[in-house]
Image (tube, rainbow, N blue to C red):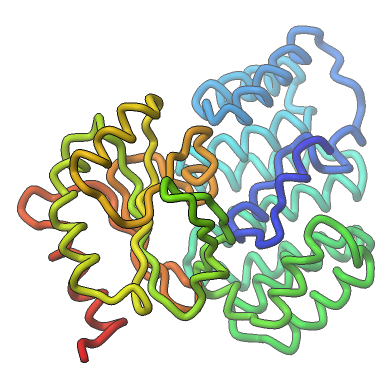
Amino acid sequence: MNKIHRALLRVPIVMLLSTPISSHPFADDERPIQNPEAAELLKQGQQALEAKHFADAEKAFNKAAKLEHDKCARCYIGLAKARNALGDTGAALNSCERALAAALDDHQRAEIRELRGDILLQTREPKKLKEAEAEYRSAVQLDPNYPVFHLKLAIALFKQSRDPEGQQEVASCLQLDPAGVYAAYAKKLAANPRRAREEFAPEFQVTTLQGQTVSLSGLSGRIVVLDFWATWCPPCRESVPELKEMTKKYPPDKLVLLSVSADQDEQKWREFVAKKNMDWAQYWDKDGKMQKLMNVSAFPTYLVIDPEGIIRERIIGLNPQESIVHRLRQKLQAMLPPG
């Protein structure tokens, strides 16, 4: 269960719905792999999946399944995860069906039902919510003592605005595991079921170039704009004057801009910030933790977080026909009227 500890005090739903194969307590509850080559391919597939090399993972799991004559549930579970990550929902769900056919006990069937629920929920299609709910209910029936099944069922119910039913499932989760890794998130979800319906930003705390400690909770009640950038990114450099203009337009007690640099060279970053007189909050994300936390992989990326902590806008890249300030203006004016 070496990966499950990645759950933070505020667990984004996307993280909760992507528990890796190796973390699931039922992953080893099936017959041993008979073919040594298949066993090695299964291992390679799991490693590729964790490294987000999804095409490689798909190939490895598919070949392993064939070598095991379609009797390897773990192969098809991995294949479903890889295909889902590649955006092929239909193939991912089909792989789950193949996994169910190869499963040997209710523990593993519950795991597969959970995975089907995750895939259906991630499609974000309203009509799929009922199907996801049904899958989680099947998982709960197969193993009612695994707390995460109840928590995921609660999320599916909350997404349908069926809050009283969702609260019951959260209570079941906490009763089974009151101090587990998901307990803090479960309690926050129970206190505010909107967390299942809105994209709440995960909590963060950083120390800026100016030596100030900045945290999302500490900025509660203000709009927060996160600017993910780097000195080697031409569009990022071009946006600096307009970002500076934005800090002057909105008072700091209403809006806070935090620029998060992906630079590898600290000195180059410091010199650029000083040269351009970037006098707002600056943070050097030397280990990439903020990028991972906010699921940022392109530059520039701008996140607009409202006073409640909900991500209201995610702007990726710079449109040469439209400046960053212009792209943010309507959103910011709607959230923060002048006056």
